[in-house]
Structures are given as C-alpha cells and as structure tokens.
Amino acid sequence: MQKELSVPARRKGNAGSWALIGAVVAVTVAAFGYVGGWLAPQRLTPARLIDQFQRNAGTFAGYRRNHAKGVCVAGYFDSNGQALAYSAAQVFAPGRTPVVGRFAIPGSNPYAPDSSVPIRSMALRFALANGQQWRTGMNSMPVFPVATPQAFFAQLQAQQPDPATGKPDPAKLAAFFAAHPETAAFRAWAKTAKPSASFATESYESLNAFVFVDAHGKRQPVRWRMLPQATDGGGAAGKAGDADYLAADLAGRLAHGPLRWQLQITLANAGDPTNDATKTWPSDRRTIDAGTLVIDATTPQQSGECRDINYDPLVLPAGIVASDDPLLPARSAAYADSYLRRTSEEAHLPGTAAPQPEKQP
Amino acid sequence: MTPTTGTFTLPARVLHWLMAILIVAMLFIGVGMVASVSARHEWLLAIHKPLGIAILILAIVRLAVRLRHPPPPLPADLPALQKLAALASHWLLYALMLAMPLIGWAMLSAGGYPVMLGSSLRLPPIFPVSPVAFAVLRHLHGWFAMLLFLTFLAHMGAALYHGLIRRDGVLSSMIRGRRKTAPASIGYSGEPAENAHAADAGSNGPDAAERIE
Ligand code: HEM
Ligand code: HEM
Image (cartoon, rainbow over all chains, first blue to last red):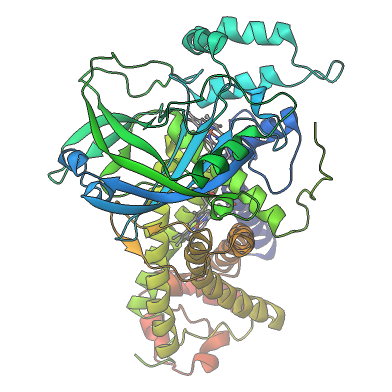
C-alpha cells in the first residue's frame, strides 16, 4: 500500500479499479447469458422445441402444443397389490386411487380429424392418499420414432410445411429418415397401423423406461402399458365425414358403463436398454398385472379438469424414479413450456397468442 | 453488540456470505434449468426447490438478525443519492429473497403440482389451484429473478466501488466485521475508540490519508 498518493497516481489507480469492476460485472453477465441460453443459440432449449411445434402447425391459443385434440376422463385405479414387491409407491398398495385422465391424438391442431393419425394417447394423473402424485402419458404404439430430443427436434424441422406447397418437403423428410435409421421400427409399424374407431380398444404404452424402487431401495427398470378389456369395434375408423368420432364413441360407451384397462408392468432384465424408446424389450420379459384402471366419466377438454393438468411424465411418487432415457427430461421441460404458454393464453396475459376464430378443416 | 460500533455482527456476516452464494447459485440454476432439455433440467430442478425453501428460512432468520442488530451506518460523506440507492437496494434484496421462494412455492401450488422437495418430502399447497394464477406467478418468478439478478449486479458493483475506489471501509465491514473508520465518519458512528481497533484490521492508514488529502 502506498501512502500519500499524488492526484494523478490516484486517478490512474482508479481507472484500473473501474476497469476491474466493469470486468467483474461483464463476466458475470456473460456467464449468466451463456447458462441461460441467450448467448448459446445452438443449444436445444424447451422454448426452441415448442417454437418448432408452432412453426409446423400454427398457434392455437389455450391448447396443448402437442396432443392438442382430446377429451377429459375420470375414474380410479384399483390396485391388486402385486406391484408393491417392486415399488413402494402408495398407488400400488391394495385399494383405490382416484384418477383424472385425458385421451388425445398427437398433433398440434385441436381441430384435426380423428382419422388423421393412427396413434391415440392416454394421460393419467393418480392422486395418492399421501398427497404425492403419479402422472403418465402413454401412446398406442410399440416404439417411439426417435431416441433423443435432438433427433425429435430434427424430425419436427423436417416435417415443417414448405411455404410454397403447404406440405412438408419430401426431400427433407427422406434426408431425416436416412440420417436416423433408428426410426425404422416405428416406420414399419406405421405402414400398417390404422386409426382406431375408439379410444376404448387401444393399448397404451409408456415407451420410456422408468425405475421402480422397493421398500428396501432395490431398483428395477420397468415399462408399463394399459391393456384394454374392451375389444369390440376397434377395427374400422368412424363414419365418413365425421371428424370427431372418438369423443362420441367414448361418451356412448361410458353411457353403458365404465371402461377398464389392466395396468401391466414389464420388468427389464439386466442389459435391456432403458435409454432408448425406439427399441422394444424381448417379449419373454416378466410382466405383472398391477391392477385395473376404471374410467367412468368423460367431459369435453374445454371444461374438464384435465385441461389445466400438465401430464409431466416426471411427476412421480416415491417408489418410481426416472430412468436414463434422455426423452424423459426433454418431455418434462417441453411440457412445462407448453403448459406455461397455454395457461398464459388462458389468463389473457399481454404478449400471448389470442384465441383464433375456430377454423375447422 | 450495540448498534453503534460500526460493525456487522458475526451472524449477519455469515448469513450475508452464505446467502450470497446460495442466491447467486439459484439464479444460475434457475435460468440454466429452464434452458435445458437434458438431464440437467431434472437434477437442477431437484436442487432448486429444496435450496429455494432453505433460502426462505435463512431470509427470515436474517431479517430477524437485521431488525435486532441494525447495520453500521454508511460513511457520513457518502452523497445522499448514493445513500438512498444503498438503502433502497438493500430492502429490495430482502424483499426479493423472501418473495422468490414464496412465489415458486405458490406457483407450483396454483399449477396443481405436488410441491416435492425430495422423493417423498412434500410441502402443503399455499395457493388454490388456478391456471391463471399459475401463469401470473410463473412469469413473476422469472421477472423477479431478473430484477434480483440486476439488483445483485448493482450491489456487487457498489461493494467493489466502496472497496476499490472510495476505500471507505464499507466493504471490509462486511468481510471483517470491523469498519475501518475514516475520520470523516468518526462522529457519525459515535465511538472514537473504534479507530484504535480499526487500525489492526489492516490498510486503514492509506484510506485515512487519502481522505484527508
Ligand atoms: C422429446 C420428445 C417429446 C416431446 C418434445 C413431446 C412434446 C409434447 C408436448 C409439448 C405435449 C403437450 C403438453 C402439454 O401442454 O400439457 C405433449 C403431450 C403428450 N405427449 Fe409428448 N413429447 C415427446 C415425447 C413423447 C413420448 C415418448 C410419449 C410416449 C408415450 C409422449 C406422449 C404424450 C402424451 C400422451 C401427451 C398428451 C398428454 C395430455 O393428454 O395432456 N410424448 N408432448
Ligand atoms: C431464492 C429463491 C429462488 C430463486 C432465486 C429462483 C430463481 C429461478 C429462476 C431464475 C428461474 C428461471 C426463470 C425463467 O427463466 O423463467 C426459476 C424457475 C423455476 N423455479 Fe425458482 N427460484 C427460487 C425459488 C424457488 C422455489 C422455492 C421453488 C419451488 C418450491 C421454485 C420453483 C421453480 C420452478 C418450478 C421453476 C420453473 C422450472 C421449469 O419451468 O422448467 N423456485 N427459478
């Protein structure tokens, strides 16, 4: 430390100090900007994923950015206690757990005809007595087309309609499939898959792997599916000219009584892939029946309880944890962004999309 | 500890630096997790929620310490505008470190999510389920976080300004708990004996010399 600094020396010293302060602040801001993604335009973020959904199909205020068209359902899960040996989750103790669910079809357009895709989905929220929840979203297909969020994003980009034709560019799609051979299993299935005439006759698959944890902390990788008890009338798609036959079919069936599915848990063997939703596990894997899902009521999604639920697959009770499947955190992050956008639109917050006049196809 | 000794109490200093690290970490964790689709989103969120509630508890303790032991006065020769800025920004920081975790907790409640701090530790909801309230609170959580970050930057810049340019002992009073009392503020802090103690705190001499100059 110097004593008796002369005036110029002090000014010089201060210039250095000012520069130091400026540098510390600038480095902090830059680090924040990088971590927050603003200074990292290459990084795939939840917002960039959801923007791409909107670029492909348009923005439908208040609706989910994917699986936009659907109906709410309610009922309960009747556990038989058999899964308790593998998961300590309270939902697997013998007895009933109330469920609020949603059937839907994939796609961002809430007015798409039911026959536009061969896939149906079931989302469930189990409200456990201990206040914990289990949320799951399942699709009626054996495998997912891609294994990573980056590949999913590339697929969305390849599917973006060409402004000239209003349709995806076939060359881009071909290039995407060539670059992603893991899509082969899904494409083989999609070639023969027909849109079902009912939600009730479909089997819904978790596709992503999860890990059950028992009371002693022992871990068991699993996948689950909801296997329908109803088998009639799943074949031919609904009447010609009716774009919304699924909701009507569901209400018609429920008028005659509840619909049921068995919750089947498939236990992985050591070495089965848990991080790849494009691959099925061998069919001889042990499967346990955990209980019966009973659906006894339906309401339109505009007024039903499911409207404001984010079926985030990582809202899990103690006894179920995520696997290393990279799709799971991506789904959780992207659904949160989709949920924020649609609830912001519901709240009419400034800067959010306004509801569009109903444009029926 | 009397309020006129010109020092921050030990609990105040420990809380200050501990919370400074935690809050800045929370800001980085927060913006980092919402900008990621990788597993980082999950494990950062798993840290974010319990750490945020820990900050809420620490902030309440800290406010109690603050009210019982007022901090040492600012240097008497500090321009009024800077004093006002210091005062306002300190209260803004207190308000935000309490509001941020409360908003986080309330927004998850409004969204109908179980507020899980671990695999089975769950907090009760503090807000009725409402999508409109969720959206408003979720945006507030983001905007207040940006305000907190800007206030933190100003606070850090001001602390360095006191430490490197004014060298008036304000920064060291939070580091060593001993304000290096410059002559200009002796009357203000009201305890001349302080000067003798301050000398052993380090580089008091040059600061004083500069002031007189
Ligand atoms: C990275 C890949 C994926 C992305 C980016 C994605 C994106 C989305 C988005 C944005 C929503 C709307 C969420 C909301 O606003 O509540 C959604 C819904 C849904 N997704 Fe995905 N998804 C992905 C993978 C999957 C997979 C692997 C499944 C497998 C089962 C799946 C099943 C569902 C179901 C069932 C719904 C409807 C939930 C409901 O009815 O509310 N998704 N998806
Ligand atoms: C000092 C306390 C806290 C700070 C500084 C903080 C900061 C942040 C920041 C910066 C973000 C990103 C905002 C954005 O970019 O939109 C965020 C998001 C979030 N915070 Fe906090 N937070 C705090 C406490 C909490 C608490 C106590 C909870 C819940 C119990 C919470 C839950 C969340 C959630 C759920 C998100 C959004 C995650 C997503 O959308 O994927 N935060 N927080």
